[in-house]
Amino acid sequence: KVFASLPQVERGVSKIIGGDPKGNNFIYTNGKCVILRNIDNPALADIYTEHAHQVVVAKYAPSGFYIASGDVSGKLRIWDTTQKEHLLKYEYQPFAGKIKDIAWTEDSKRIAVVGEGREKFGAVFLWDSGSSVGEITGHNKVINSVDIKQSRPYRLATGSDDNCAAFFEGPPFKFKFTIGDHGRFVNCVRFSPDGNRFATASADGQIYVYDGKTGEKVCALGGGKAHDGGIYAISWSPDSTHLLSASGDKTSKIWDVNVNSVVSTFTMGSTVLDQQLGCLWQKDHLLSISLSGYINYLDKNNPSKPLRVIKGHSKSIQCLTVHKNGGKSYIYSGSHDGHINYWDSETGENDSFAGKGHTNQVSRMTVDESGQLVSCSMDDTVRYTNLTLRDYSGQGVVKMDVQPKCVAVGPGGYAVVVCIGQIVLLKDQKKCFSVDSPGYEPEVVAVHPSGDTVAVGGTDGNVRLYSILGTTLKDEGKLLEAKGPVTDVAYSHDGAFLAVCDASKVVTVFSVADGYSENNVFYGHHAKIVCLAWSPDNEHFASGGMDMMVYVWTLSDPETRVKIQDAHRLHHVSSLAWLDERTLVTTSHDASVKEWTITY
Image 1 (cartoon, rainbow, N blue to C red):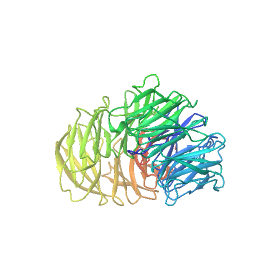
Image 2 (cartoon, rainbow, N blue to C red):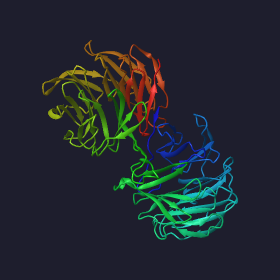
Image 3 (tube, rainbow, N blue to C red):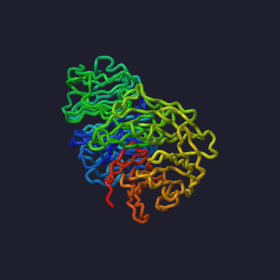
Image 4 (tube, helix red, strand yellow):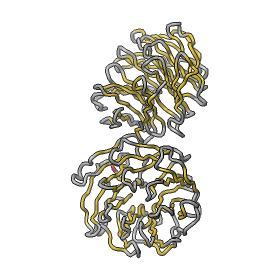
């Protein structure tokens, strides 16, 4: 199962959502990924990860069989949508620089690509040979948007940071004239599906409508300004009579174009994160994208409240943990912007915690015996959050003296936090002891299930054992040697073994009952290992590394291993957790969460 990331958004920049001509899916980009989601059931998702650079825009061909996606380096990839492998059909580099928008002709044979190249801002060519079918000229700054009339005679329109739109006839496409009605950047140009009209939307808060064949101005929507803020996106209704607009004034609006009036105004909220950066009208679905990355399904009958809001992560995920709550298994994921999300592991339904939480990267999370999520963050705090309330307000926050890197919990209300150059013992959400200059740099920590021993892994390649005695930590004077700087430590659930992984690509397992003697060594990763997790069966454990690999190891036999290749292609795996003996959850900097069924 794939729990997909949200769109990657930035303030003041339009976000394009691509629609599926067959009406089933919608597509958007995040990082190096293109995400395809089912519009009726957005929990069903697929991720395309073949771009080497950040992808900006993806658009379906009108045939529905191919998708063209463009990245910041100017690469355009055209790939198959019908098979799971998404085979690459063609790759082009129309110009050197960021691709900002893509448009196809209705026969799926020609493609226009625009953006910020060095010597040119756009190109239009045949999809199968790359040969030019015209020139995109007439602008002297970045072109933000392009669209092609979906009926003959073909027309093409562009919108640019030079405050102008331009109109072309073709093929071959030739520049006809510039349209200078807007006073600020032109963010979006779109032809109506029937080709009779096209509309332009700008940072000046205005939308103009033109004749699709001649390019003559028809009207300004709303007479003067259409929105109180800049407009980032517009999308026509399938019947070409209405237009959806998304604006920085935190609203989306539906316009009846023929009578030039607003039909509904959707007020999305009052914070900066409620600014509307993208929209899509597909079948009966009206979607908008907020600066928070959230995808809103707008309700025509009740503009004040969306039908549903798709949440998740838009920034890379650092850590995850799992917990059963009321008979259901939940996955908790924390990201590098401090956002924590919880997912129903069956349905993928998810939401974020209420209230104000961490303000910086969540580095590590775990669940204690009283059902609280214990999280440590680069904002120098450790938080205890009740998992039945899922609300930060009025909950325990422990301020640390230095930045915490890792936290582990044990029975009896204990938690051990590893900070930069410091190890802190907490009992019942209060600091009770700290080892201030341990003489090495501690990185990671695990507490034995019995609650009496703490294992701390250091950058010096050793694991040290401490005992919890009342409210103190006593150094046992025992060194366990790893093969390199320690990156994670974990005790098996029955407390019999301690697994240690390191930057030298090795996992070492120590046997607790035999005085922590070395039990076995596991080789296989091609790069630094970053995370470890024991299966509930105490027989298997999983490791994830910078080589983008996940291995599931069998304790008794280092040779038998299950290999998950390219678990999150092009992104290293940042965290692992087991839902049950057969189900492993992985996450990575691609901001998505995946579930794998493991068979031995």
